[in-house]
Image (cartoon, rainbow, N blue to C red; front, side):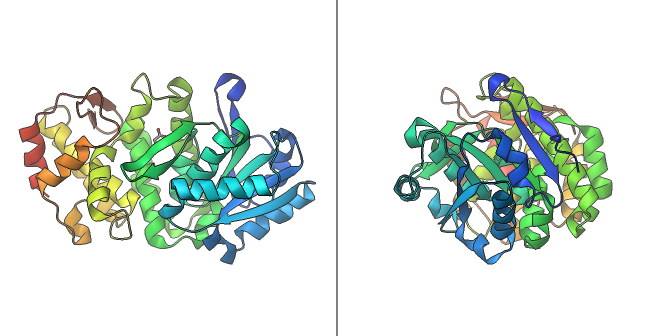
Length: 369
Ligand code: GLY
């Protein structure tokens, strides 16, 4: 197998490779060793993953590549992405003697990636880190693009830093042990890329999404690659979400964040499930505003339903008052100058940003749940 990365995120002297394939955990050591400045690495991982073969598979390859590994497990769950969780991790890194040229490896889902990435941004004023995502959601979204951070009592991801990794290693074989519900939730983010940028990819997903979810490794690699190509292009053009282009990655997310907040960020509604519902809302809103054909909303809804994703809170036995959803949206950090900003579409494959959404239209849409 070649050592050539599947993709490169092009950010000048902060460019980095994304290695993608099945069975890459064992090879991560040889792939990343040339990028590291000292052979001592700090493996930050989800304590829940210690019961899986993933950390041992990774560590064996790291050892073979001549790297010395210190493993630092963090408790599973969103509560690790907190000031207290950050403090514990940084204390542990300092106690074990992390140095300016050491590197942190983040093995896990979005919680571990965001927390370890933020620790890498601030400990000793910044050390290198590598993302090795183990959930589909992290593989196609949070592990690439350099957004790191923690939650506060005021909301999610409100404290953080843009800190690009030195490399990302995506091994689709780890998805075999992911619960089906979590896999589907991650798949919603893949559908998002078709929605915002690539109608042909959306059509490909309609044909191959079920095989991907059933375990077809070829379909998984192909879909993750296309999703990451789109993300890498967007991040290269608008790394810090300034021009509006990176904001397109939030298609469905303004609604999703409100549903998640009201559902309590737990197993009642997973992030990717909220994104699925939110994308259908964004599509409906676009159709109501005359921006996009209603037929595209129906097509999106049909595909999400076919793969078993919810398209309305009712599908998860949830119901929310429109006013409460609106109040929650107004707390979202994506608000610009006090105005709600929506990522809508002109149809499948073409997302756009707008602030021109009247409150009464929005309330009517939310009441239709
Ligand atoms: N998850 C959205 C972004 O990376 O910008």
